[in-house]
Amino acid sequence: SSRHSTKKYAAAIALAAIAFYLLISGAGVATERSFLMLAIMLMAAIFDRAAISMRNFALAALAVALATPHEIVGPSFQMSFAATAALISAYAAWGEWRQNGKRRPPPPKNTSFFRHGSGVVARHFVGLAATSLVAGTATALFAAWHFQRVSPLGLVANLATMPIISAVVMPFLVLGLVLMPFGLDGPAFAVMGKGIGLFTGIAIALSKHSPFDAIGILPASAVVCLTLALVILTLTTTRLRIAALPFLAVGVVLIARRPAPDLFISEDARLVALKLSDGSVTVNRNRPNSFTLEDWTRAMMATDVVKPGRTASSAMPEIAPEVPFSCTRTLCVAWNARGVVVAQAASEDAARDACAVASLIVIDDATAGDPCGANGPAIV
Image (cartoon, rainbow, N blue to C red; front, side):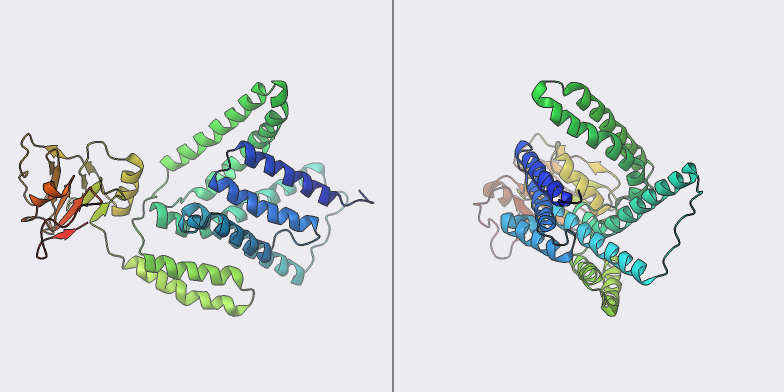
């Protein structure tokens, strides 16, 4: 080790290992992003460059954007790069503060093993808590934007589960991969599975005791302002960080004054949700997509979901104020307390029956025209 750069050897082996993992994992988008980020940092270590720096972070972001440009607007890209930028900036500031501050004297030689060990463990958990707090704060904005929820007990969950992941899951995962060619991987993966079940159970238990998680939909203007504040805080290293304060203030004000949405429409126009005055939300399908509906109910801060009622007739269903969706085979209509009448139709012909009463008609047919004419309701 005194004659050779073992750090470079370790980086080369790690690069080969993550490339192997990329191949056996199926090369999903999230895995490709992680591989590109790690590969750039490991190559930097091989060529005597700083592995963790904003320059390498920018190169990784550009590489991911070129490889999968559509991921830029997705939660995976935004959350992972926000966390990485925040961690690099925070630990750079911490290192600068330690370098400029007073040096702590070394511990006395007669320190007991227990005292020394407890200090090491305490520093490990403090570092883990700081990492979780910084990364969790940076990603909370994008989690709230995409999923309309936050994790108030995320710090507690990370502190409780990271020792399991570090001491049980990851070592036995690697051991299982090594033993797999010999057919001896079963016991190792069984232990890994027990570890996964344990930290999953901890996460579920903490989620059940969270005081809140759903926060409703965020306005895009607030997300832009808070993102600009995050960029300024992470990329600047001087008093220019103060420039983030106006964007923070404006973002908070925009969230406080956000309008509450009354209506959501799925991308394929098959699912429509309308909020009623009692806090419940009515949908036009008896078996809606559970993931989509869960996101919508959090965004609307809804208290309950009301499934549609069915009518035997094929004619226009009867409607009245504050009545959930009433449906025929081809047409569903609902009316909330604000006087908004929403119809969801399977075709242009079915939508024509709702032209006289609806404020908005959603047609589940991309080729459909406007069946109501210029003075009719809005058509989606």
